[in-house]
Length: 404
Image (tube, rainbow, N blue to C red; front, side):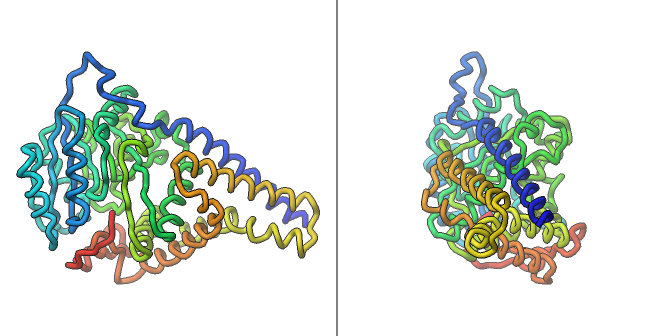
């Protein structure tokens, strides 16, 4: 019983620390909508190159381009790389570019050995960009007219060299809602945002490829996407490159500047997060297993054990009280996230289901990463059993591929 009591003290203490970090992160996660380039009357408006890798994106690219073409920022170009698409991506872009002289499409080259698809696409785009600032964004994003000007305001106001802006994630199916918002919950819980800004250690850094803005000279000095050409999580690794080279980086909340719907069904959710979970742990099954078990113990066990403690086990009141405290902290975090990001309140009560989704997808990711079939990413399968010798094993021609 003493061991069980000690265990619950440890879990409760850990959750209190997570709560403190979560609250600080909510404060530090500044909304880009509060910034605007017009606040800097004495500063010129440098050319911003908006760079969009697009592989089989005929369903999304038109809406994305139309939203970007309406930007209130006065000086930008848009380059779209058609990454060997087999659908009508190039045709859609050409139709829209005929109405806007600052939109151009580039035909992507075949994927060379040693590169991942998106990194190579971004590399090609950067080579063609003329801007002083490079903005990488995804084809499945939808931008408000102030998206670019707010991001430029944020990078100037804070004296930064690069930023990543997190979209408001649109979720429709229960599968999306259980996983997409859970990812943000974990980010706010465990990543100390104050160290992203003030620490030089690249360990304390994260990003999302839906919106990455660099000073061009910074992008070139860190080696661009060529420096991380074998990394599945290209967005996170390129942000770490920024910090390794001594530049200033920060993340921002873009929920009032642009939207994104990452996945549309269970298959896409499983494929997308399997890719992410495998790469986060560098394909180390032992490390991934330890973290998976820890997540189960911290975030699921209190919900399962509390009613048993009250109705069946008859444990001391102190243990029951600690379990109640754990459930209250976990639920409070979910409520705060729901309010901040305008998610569905009904999903608060489904939080244990989110944990189950994560655990099952983590197991799937571990099996897939050690399989000859490899990790699926945008219709391409990569053998990651030897990370230093990552190989393309399949290049699918299916149009309905998994979103980045």
